[in-house]
Length: 501
Ligand SMILES: *Cc1c(COP(=O)(O)O)cnc(C)c1O
Image (cartoon, rainbow, N blue to C red; front, side, top):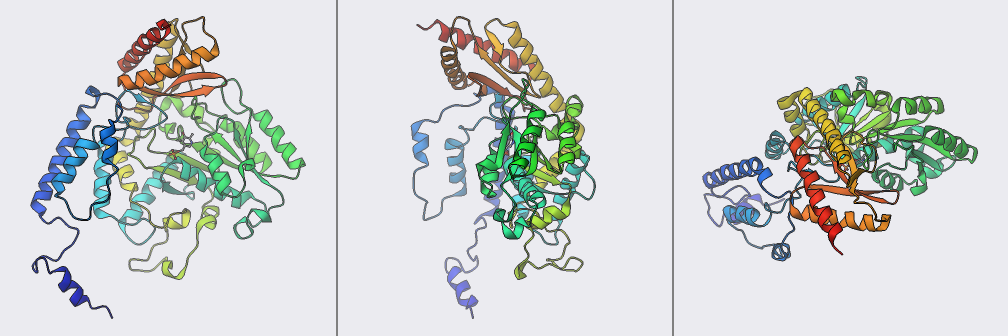
């Protein structure tokens, strides 16, 4: 038997009236510090546009993070001062109105506060009979309805798009692998399992098929058309050839917005093809799926509602603070059959009472057992703004992408390097008279100079041989004149570089 009394006595030895815990030693002082943190955070957010988008960290700051873990305590106020001096001034920059790199969201204030409240309540969303599970179930239902999926569909909030896509592909593999893959593994399949996507598909799918045991050959990349959408005739040809060669096609992955150029595959045509070929139809909607709430994009997304599964990112174009993604699966049984394992210590009484009751355990629909209360920030953000406002923010980004395109086409020294898909603009500085190699080098330096100027932060991509600047405008804080500033700065830096011998 554990001698709790003597353990308690030992802990109490510092001050018998106050047994040691991880709670504040001085609640009043901690509360005051918390108010200071909130005030500073609001000040920081409200003055974002007055600071550089990004700035490099001095060496001294990098070295600050090399010290060993402290053995003893520090005053909470001193820990916070350390944060203010060494962490807060060096952000990635994505909350800023002129951050357009990779593909990110800005965050929301309510989302940040909700993350605090979620951590205070600190529930575990693996399962159990407590309110947080109802919050997540409601958020999943909202997303399901947004996508026009049937009520019987299942879903799960995830860390992001990568995990959402992984979960969907795992279900697809088991559901359409042709044999009992769950128990026999991929070696039980009649031949090599193959999923298909366009060459523009996100790299997370390669990670997924490799970790699902299919090998990288288990993802076949299909040619695209001039607008970077999948070539459906080429896809049909590949499927037929692979079947003839004894392979087992099981899934087609559509892009609802590619990461390079925002191209949206013809999902209605892909849904037809998958129905005819009895293939799982998965949509990677990490970029575009949430745009079903935006009038300007909805028509392009036609066919997505026919998918077997959709992966969404809520921390991109819906701006929920990282991390927040989701997967919605039409066939709930197939979803659960892929992940449900119930050992004794996780037995739960579906109809009963007590803390372990509850019909729906989210841990039976994905890889994680312990899961954070990420649903709260989504729930509170959607309640605060309503879906229509999220739609208007998306519509405005689409309009801003077109506006930036117009500014680029007006300038002789700038050129668009791809059709503008959704909110992604690929372009480069091209003063004329330079070959591809020289232009690529010039634009690479231009991007670095632009980022170091702190004025704006696009990123880049390479399309064929062409290195391009890439502005992914998933930003609820960008204003139209931010793009005037971008073009002005690109021209200024480009001209200075072109003038160098
Ligand atoms: C970002 C992205 C992913 C990966 O999502 P994460 O949230 O970064 O894990 C997958 N597919 C597409 C199209 C993306 O843009």
